[in-house]
Image (cartoon, rainbow, N blue to C red; front, side, top):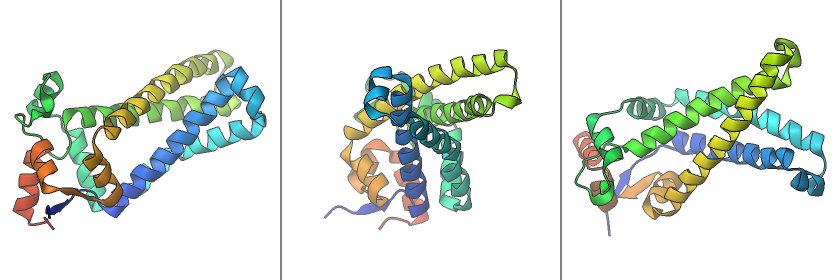
Length: 204
């Protein structure tokens, strides 16, 4: 039987799942609100709008609460550091053959995390301006609506891409679901991280 390697803590998995649920609800409710044919069939537009707004306001909450976890904070530091190896990984057409040694997160995962977090902040800020109409004049709120709509579309595409790549890697999904991955997968996909795990003696 393959040795399992601990990859994500319970707190990290909970943050990911909660954020995923909130993001999914925001995307679905946004589709209802912005597509007239769907909106007619669903009805309850005011309820849908409230669900969208409050789930949007709640999006940063799991990430903020996750800061109480040491493992989560350590992974945030990893995600924020872009190395020369990450840049080579992003440019390479054969990035998954294992020849470029990768830490716990590859360049694509770091890029996805940065885009997602930045977009959430933009959507939150523009959403606040749109919802609390007394905060800014009409011209600014109109601009906020324009930015919000286009960023929402970009985030939707980003999520689709994230799910697409996740569906192609069952072991990565297992790591997020159970917190553990096989040693063979780690050696192939994240060799530098596996070496770090072995040095710390956290293989199980």
